Image 1 (cartoon, rainbow, N blue to C red):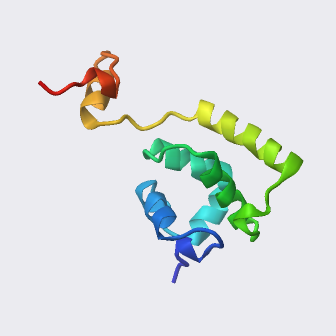
Image 2: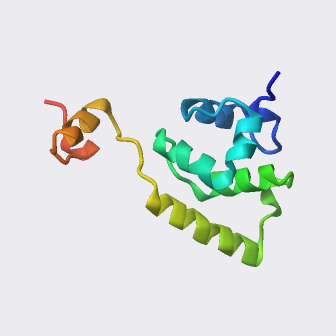
Length: 115
């Protein structure tokens, strides 16, 4: 039986739910993907990118406390996170934005105002 994502150090039920939305359903899948590929999938599935969430994942996959990342290591992880964030397409804010984008109309959430 597969281990739940939340069995990995530092990762709780909210992270497990985010992983499920991204198609990651077990700790084994998460470990096999690795931090960068898994976090890219989270972003693509609509999780808002956040550096702390990223380095908590990295530390958890290494079996380390979430706050163990410091100094040069943290700076290097920040550079990896920034590169990952800029190279990963985020999910659209809503279905209508995705549909409009599909036909070539570029809008953002602020363009859709209630009338």
